[in-house]
Image 1 (tube, helix red, strand yellow):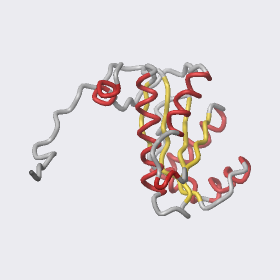
Image 2 (cartoon, helix red, strand yellow):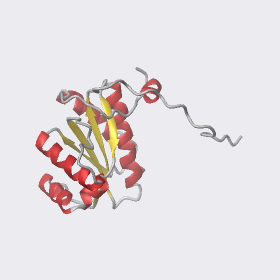
Image 3 (cartoon, helix red, strand yellow):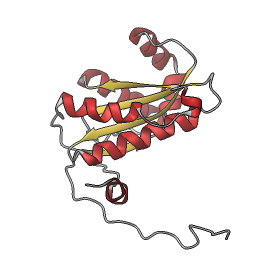
Amino acid sequence: MDAITNMLTRRSIRKYKSDMIPKDIIGKIIEAGTYAPTGMNRQSHVIIAVTNKELRDRLSMLNAKIMGVDTDPFYNAPIVLIVLANKDYPTYLYDGSLVMGNLMNAAHAYGISSCWIHRAKEEFASEEGKELLRILGINGDYEGIGHCILGYADCEEPTVSPRKENYVYWAE
């Protein structure tokens, strides 16, 4: 699939099978994330690839608690790619957001479903989140940008919503 078709057809999926994605495909998706543009090529972000079910479930519970629900905010997706970015760089939020976009588009190119799940900022500002970073050996002033959940869809692909009017203004 060409890049433009990929971007036009990717949709967020909110229901997943528990089947694991092959590690080499996860690695290719992550690699695409590492090639996202960043301010002055500082590469302010890190990606945590969570494939361990116990840790994935722990993060899900923490995320649900922040959201105030007792359901799985990761929609049963077996893989969570967490994007964090170093706040020492003025473009960190934009850098991390571009990484998230690359991850989701790369996943779609490989036939893998994805969705951006929020509350990573709150998760990794919490003591539990900070402890996880310490355990993983991640040092620095990192802020959670988002969770890119990955898996095989367990639902029909959503239809495309029409684009809003006045989306683009031309200044010719």
